[in-house]
Image 1 (tube, rainbow over the protein chains, first blue to last red):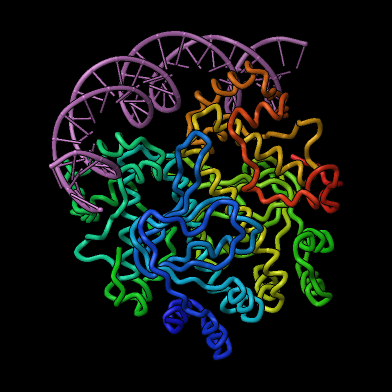
Image 2: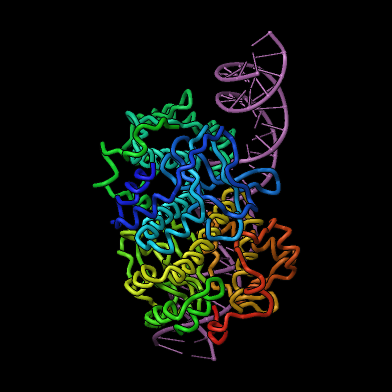
Length: 254
Length: 254
DNA sequence: CGGTTGTTTGAAGCGCCTCAAGCTGAGTGG
DNA sequence: CCACTCAGCTTGAGGCGCTTCAAACAACCG
């Protein structure tokens, strides 16, 4: 398990033996968490850092009027709160969508490592920076695309992110979100998400049944929403194609 | 100038003499930049890190259809691209709004410091994490508030951010953005921004003339949009009230 | 097997957009 | 000093995209 994390980080930052030894202090406390369960709540002091091994989770805020806004999806291999743990208190919630396997890394371990092992810190920062780039693109998505392109863009992004960790087969992947959750993500009503999905199906761009999403025509879907993958900062030589991330290969997805 | 940066960082992270010495390697190359000028363009390899001393700038993406989405505003004291400099290439642009004084910190200097001075790195990370929290709130803003509350929320946020660096007088601050720029920020049309501003004026919440924005009734405006400042992670003891950031006090704003 | 959660469809209305035109103010040149 | 220009602001009219409300249907589960 520790070796797995090390392998991921080493894919973009060379580590010394001392770095690796320090990383092994990330005691692997794996927790099985049910669906629709909060991992962290607004107001909490950030403690352990959470790493998703299997399943999907999300970052969200509850609004005064009872609605909620989902701000990020987490898929296997993603850190939930790496980019928060320095701050004083959480300004949002993190909760699971599907059942999840979560690794809890003690904050102290992170701090020790980042203080004494700059290369590890750089590697973790890189993860956080890509997450932020995704967040920026979500802002663009919500701010400037209409519903059909907006949802198509989400599907394209998840395709690439899940491909990078070996969770896509034949352009299909697990999609355990309800239409209401998609609505809370995209800034739309659930009714309109339903109609938009119907339209994407009618155009034979996707199918979505039994919580499995299939993209029928990837180039067409990408063109449809003007998808530009540069913001994901995927390093093709390392991440894409047939190559899987070894430490996630044998874990059940979605 | 270097001392100024050191002072800012020390407000939330104690530094050693060695840390401070390293920070002085941030050779202060101050540049005067005209309005509506790009500092960095999409596709560029991140180089120097930019720190705004005076004026306003923004982060934005150009879209295939010619529209653009603004994703962040930068005000005096903000780093533009601290959270990007590790990545391979820029996935967006950064440009000025008003004339700006910009400090360019060589990437090499940042890397040297972050490698050898973990406390400085933590301080810089803190800046970046707050910027990301702001970005998340912008997503909430665009995704779930309608135009009047959306724009009101922006005004409340800028009030607090500018207060923290001593650029607010009597609830007034410089607002050099055109209505089209506000529209590109909020995911609205410029026509609708115009009508929304008219409405906020009619309700006697704000005035906006000669590029000066005045909030006539702060508590009312905050209540109007349900503003919750927690995401700014302001440390009141240090940042708010009468206390100014010394290194920005004598620089002309907006 | 009912109960509950999620999906689907219809109908009516509002918020925001587009198109279009006129207005205002600042800068420029004759 | 006024005419001209141009960017930004303002206002009107019409239409579309999305929302809300409502109800029926489907799928899952104890």
